[in-house]
Amino acid sequence: MKFIGFLLMVLFAVPAAAQDMSMFKTGPVFEDFGPHAPVEGVDSVPADTEFSVAFDVAKAAEDGTRNRGFESAARFINMHVAAGVDPDNIRIAVVVHGKASLDLLDDAAWAARQPVGEEEEAPDNPSSAMIRAMLDHGVRFILCGQSGAAHGIKQEDLIPGVETALSAMTAHALLQQGGYTVNPF
Figure 1 (cartoon, rainbow, N blue to C red):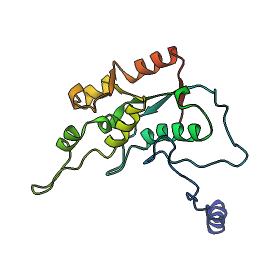
Figure 2 (cartoon, rainbow, N blue to C red):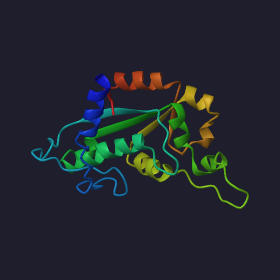
Figure 3 (cartoon, rainbow, N blue to C red):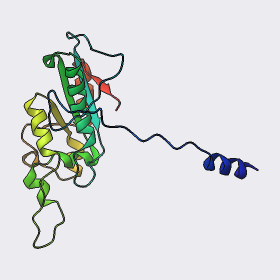
Figure 4 (tube, one colour):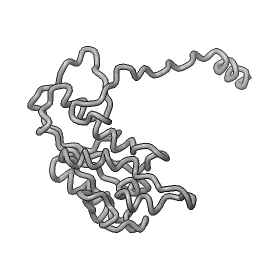
């Protein structure tokens, strides 16, 4: 009887609505990434709002794409500046550990780890241009030293400007002492 109820539920379930991404735009800070959408009824956030937010990223980018966790930090900046927050009032740190650590490699170190055929040229790190632009904007990228050690990552393998902490736990504890909140997304 339970099976029949389950089967009827599956057969008559309303299909989930398709996502409408047409309202999502990039900018005003990062024009090539970090899409966000306006929200009806929310016209602005007070310009003097101050954010100090740490993003925790452990999931690596899917093959050939930018790291979604890193892009979430860019989206946070874009959407809040678009909503009227002074960009100088937004401090972002991205704490990176686990397999996502490999997404912090510079293009040469990234290419050296990519499996390619004899005649193929290894691709650049798909996240590197985004990371560089975010670093130029003052976003901090902090590698978990424990993950770096586990993955054989040396400081010279990292995109210039990426920091290394003793661990992700250490980085988060220090950031929290400095007034950062942890973004759960």
